[in-house]
Image (tube, rainbow, N blue to C red; front, top):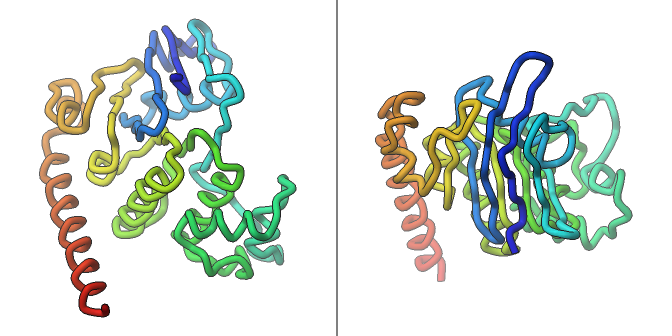
Length: 246
């Protein structure tokens, strides 16, 4: 059954129309990425999906009993507050230490349970947010520019982890990102938004679409090819290293 269906959705703030007649859907197990320039309505669409923004027209339908995990764009934790990763992950949910450890392992940071939140790097912090979103084994993960503030290598590593999460848990992923070169290689389907759906489809189809090129130019294809080359090279190197170690 389709997890999320958006039909003819419009969102207005006062007299300003942010989204107009948006249609989209997310199926089980797929990675869908929403891209678009600043002010294109990406976050408003996500907020409408989770019920934080009321549509002015159209509707959002969720599969019954859909479990959603949410990774915010950023979260400020007072650096003077003495709170461990484990305590942070158990703040609002009654979960066991075993569940916390399992979620951290899925997020790729199994050794952070006893670390202080204030001691984490930017990349580690986002992995902990990812683990917290995974702790109740959601059907779908929503990520709102979850790598903002990370460097390119950190962002690429985070998105590779997202792919691993999908492989391990089977959950669907709907994410917003401005990092086109990374996202395009991580997605099954891309939706290009600019107040309305400009184009959508596989990464290759969207990257070659005139509407996409009008917004972002033609440089993304080269960046995508470079990323894939580095990803494949690193994968081959890791595999060779493992064989050598054995």
